Image (tube, rainbow, N blue to C red; front, top):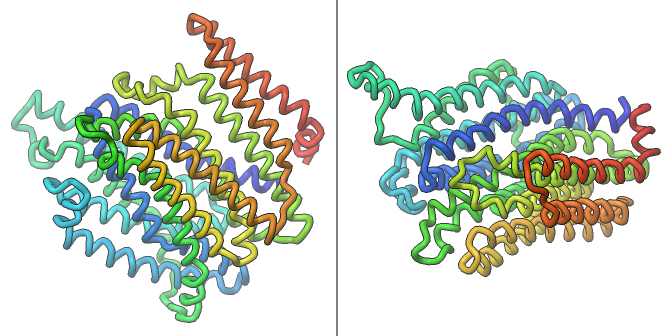
Length: 491
């Protein structure tokens, strides 16, 4: 298959498998911001930030190691799969056990001393999700995005069903009939905790759905292979952990950095709700990540592949800028996703979108150190980003609140992308078209600024004006990329 068609097709297919479940989760933000207060939603935002960081820690780069070693020799696929599965099962089980046993001191440390049950629930969620990451990676390796999609969808549907059941349906039933059988399975005191219970039920459903993939494992643990995989994956662990810190630390430390007298959980909830309006960019970069990692390992062909990687980067940036501009041009419609009392934080959305785009660019650039087996440089880049995250959050948040967190997020990923590009050109040079990509950045941001300055009154006029700006961007791209686009379409 033509490589452009392959990367585009798989990005779309994995995009669908990622986009629909995440889109449903995105709609749940609309639900949460209408049934929970800012404080209650702040609890959800804070705990899921911890979940993302701990999940990166618990998978310790094993996904990337799996792809690296499984694609080296097709004959070793099942051995690599078995070793990865056994390793992650052991570590995930141990982690979940520790979270259950030491729930109270961990809850006190996190600021939820009155709810140690939260720790038990999300400890189990993290353990299950870490363990199932390898069966999902197996599906990606075997190019089975439809099954990948179906299982992801099952998990999300189960989670959403039980969330709505516990948060809305059960209280409604008990209000009309206090003696209903529902009183035996529902307690108003759990409150926002039902979000975590529902997620746990969704994770359990994932295990059952992935059982056909898991039972394929022949329980043969290769010790030498394990050592090699851990050695290769350790820098990826540092990279992944640092990346999750860069993306989520702000939602954890806002509580500590916001000035006294501020309702910190409410501010965390407002910031978290508006941060999730940038989910469209996250969906795109995540879909691209799912298809790109196995793709670039299989396309390593010297000079020819380098030109291919450069072209893929250009089109990645183009599509990312299209997402940025379309989101901001139609923000008056998109903002209705979240509750009205959360919308004061809309000012962070453009920074969140651009930050996520540069996060995707940094990931795109990561191929140089993965292909050249210099994964330690990925760790260096991510740690530099973490340093930016910590320092600038400390400097900015106490003075300008969550806007400082949004600025810090953008700076973090911009610095990471710039650093990765600089080192990559030294050790694994790829002819990226910086001039053309820079031009598109200027055009899209310029059009966004125009849309904020010129804001016609009336929904219809504003919609038409912003559509005109979007058309101008697309026309500019067509004029500049006409020959390349036509060539791709013919292929």
